[in-house]
Length: 134
Image 1: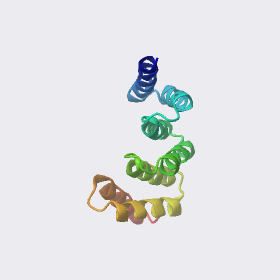
Image 2: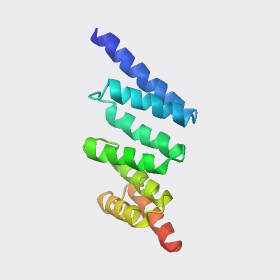
Image 3: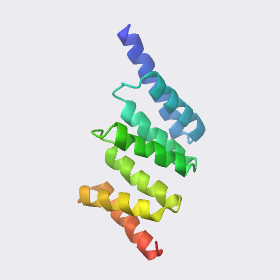
Image 4: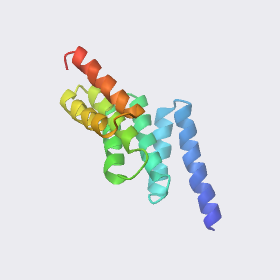
């Protein structure tokens, strides 16, 4: 039974991810929501939560994206997706014109992840914000 459950878990995750790759953001959001509801304790749950945020971001639903990325940080603090989620949370705040929140998140990430790709991307967005007068 556990092998069948694992197959269902994997196929549900893969189906949602496929929707995201095809830029069907609504379908991806529905798929990842269904996955998280059905498999909240799955080892894939942190990734599903992150990709749910990405789907919302891709759909232009930046407030929803911010909620989903923040959920990665709060619900899965030891996940490998934390830094990526923090970066995208900063980007979502930027898109929402919540520049103070964006700056705070991006500065924290830049300090925490010096020398990493996400740290460099956070620094770049902060420079852009400064150039734009934010």
